[in-house]
Image (cartoon, rainbow, N blue to C red; front, side, top):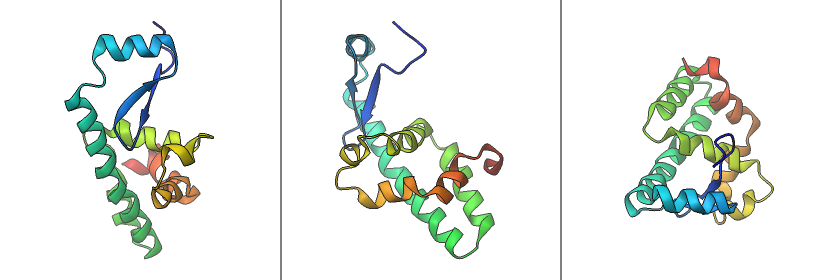
Length: 126
């Protein structure tokens, strides 16, 4: 098994992992990555992350920089923050429109350059 690359990717709407390779399929099966509780947790984390994006955008638009920074800090401090990281990563993929089907507003936020800087700039998280 290769540990340097991700053998699977999330289908965000469902929280399930889909294999990208035979190794990915084996990992999903061996580690039980699509167990009901894990799928539900990833799906819930996805749904919980969306309001943070909108809250940051609103605070920034109102020039409330402290509230925007607090929003980012709280979003990254939550359990399953890796789902938020995956959302940002997947929003830049060629298949993003498919991955975020019927979630145009979420995809638009994730692709907003100012929002990406606000969330992904490590110095702004403190």
